[in-house]
Image (cartoon, rainbow, N blue to C red):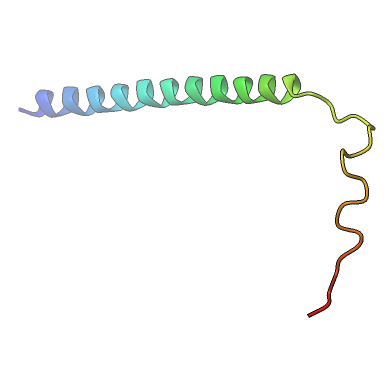
Length: 62
């Protein structure tokens, strides 16, 4: 009976190790994908806004 308990504990430990390995690999893949997306984003350009005067003159008469 003791041998069965030892093997069960070893199996649980192995399953946990495998699950952590898979989780680590998934997190690394996700981080790499996020980094690629950030690098692929277009860089901001120094062009003026389409409405450079919009919002500067506000009519506050009530």
